[in-house]
Amino acid sequence: MINVEDISVARNHQTILKEITLSFKEGEFINIMGPSGSGKSTFLKLLNGLESFNGGVIRYDGRDILEIDPIDLRREVGYVFQVPYLFGEKVRENIEYPIKLGKLELDEDYVTEMLTSLNLKKEILDKKCKDLSGGEQQRISLLRSLMLRPKVLLLDEITSSLDPINTKLVEEFIKDIYKKYHITIILVTHSVEQAKRMGSRTVFFKEGTVFMDSTTEEFFSHQQKDFIKEFIES
Amino acid sequence: MSILTLSFTTVLVLIALSISKTQKIHLEKDIIIGVIRATLQLSLIGIVLTYIFKVDNWIITTVILLLMIFNASQIAAKRGGQIKDTKKTAYVSIFLGASITIAILVITGAISYSPSEVIPVSGMIVGNSMVALGLTFKQLNNNFKNKYQEVEIKLALGATEKTASIDLIRDAIRTGMQPSVDSMQTLGIVQLPGMMTGLILAGQSPVLAIRYQIMVTFMLISTVSIATFSGALITYKRYFNARKQLNRSMI
Image (spheres, each protein chain N blue to C red):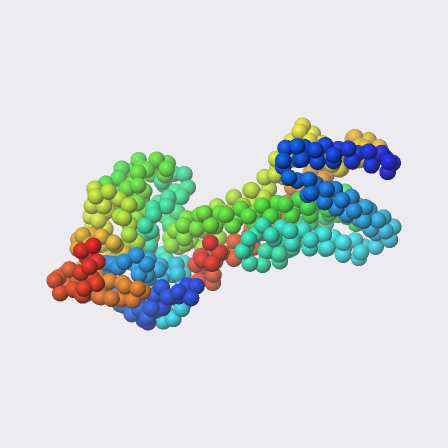
């Protein structure tokens, strides 16, 4: 579904990603891990066209993404940011925003179903954004990205500022929608425990390169490379 | 007013100087330079205007108008920080605002295209557009720096560059226009504007002076709105590249 071939990214004469080659199949659930500054978030932004690259090719469904209108690509490849930035006054504006952009009709049943899965009441839509807790804001930002029913969902450390209860809620929701809608999910996480609970495949980035790409089971087995062992135990 | 009488008014400058000195504001040098520059510049423009009014040639009038816009755009562009091509943008925007407004004034017969009418009117509208556009550039730049996350989230949801930044653009236009709108709302209550005061002091009837002032108010708001709208709409595009991504060197 997504093929990344020999991708490099440099900014201000500094290499961020170096000759990355990875393939993601439709319906896969992948964890991306690695130390801070290893290029994980930049990599994620490349996949929905929010960042540009200096060399290589990225193919989405066989097509070079440079030949796809970035707007069309972003509507199929959803992105949830680490900071749940809600805009406008009311929560509803956030849910309706992607729908209006896509000139679609709001599917109330879909919204209700998603809100229930996220353990949120429908009344939350009429609340002011600033009155929401951090956990509620992140759940709404997740729902906002799902309004266009993307085929791929990119999640950038979305639970890093949440408490354990909200983290569990969000994780369960992601696993639910993964099973129900067969969305391809790529999750950037710092949490070793979260990685164990989530994706079936784990890619480890180090200094802008792919250091390890294996099943999550193999990743957490006892035969890892020293650097990964150190990362897991830190 | 005789030259002697005018020279007596320098007492007013001495008041400003003494406040600056006694209160340690350290503006004495700037005030003195300002007074000298204002006197010399105004005297010089007085001589130039006397000549231009006498010649009454539409080509010279137009050249003067374009020069005024050029100077104003250089100053407005300074507020744009690292935004690319702000001088060009400012020139196009002020030119657009000024030319549309002057054309309407001339077509409706409010003024004639003669230097004695077009140059003072242009001075006012170009000067106001310069300030408004400078504020618009500065606000747009601040908005993109402070709210780039909001823009990027909207882009990620599939918004176009314009849709993703429309709130930032509107806010920048509002900021640029606000002083003109505020000033319009307080006319006659808080302030008696320069043009009207000048006409009354020169012996014109207050009714005629007010008529002119109303025209000036309308033309100022028109030019400022066109210039800020044009400036913001041209400038926001500089924050994006061809792949509809945020231009990171700008934020």
